[in-house]
Amino acid sequence: MKINASILETINFHVSKLPFETGGILGSHDGSLIDKLVMDIPSDKIEKPCSYTPNVDFLNDSIQQWKEKGISFMGIFHTHFGGAKMLSCGDKRYINAIMTAMPHTITYLYFPIFVLPERILVVYKAEKDGDGIKIFQDELQLLP
Ligand SMILES: [Zn+2]
Image 1 (tube, rainbow, N blue to C red):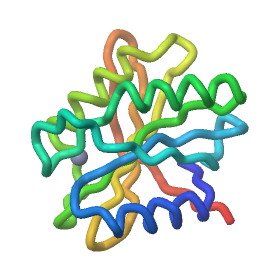
Image 2: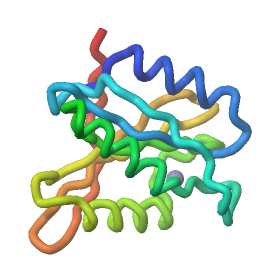
Image 3: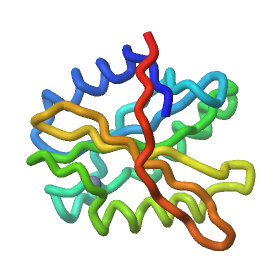
């Protein structure tokens, strides 16, 4: 996953102020380098405060607005506390749900985790694979 360094700085800035798990959507002007970010706003129906649940309505609106501006939706990041670098069962569930809901033109998306307190981004890539979805770790490429 290629990402603009300023986007990572913005993520770092936003999440350091928040006491709960949060996330946001990642976009790209050229369909490859991530150079656009919208932070999620907490949904009013949070069931488990210690795990991230995407605010689907808000994110869908943002994705639609991007589409009109020619910005590709590239994936969703979220934060993990306590140094947890692996995707949780809940994470895998929503990744599968999102991938299944995507149009055919989208064959892969990124689902990085911003791990605290280390402040590192661990990248996962989800790819359509026949009728299923495969999820694997991907290399992080920071571009200036
Ligand atoms: Zn998670």
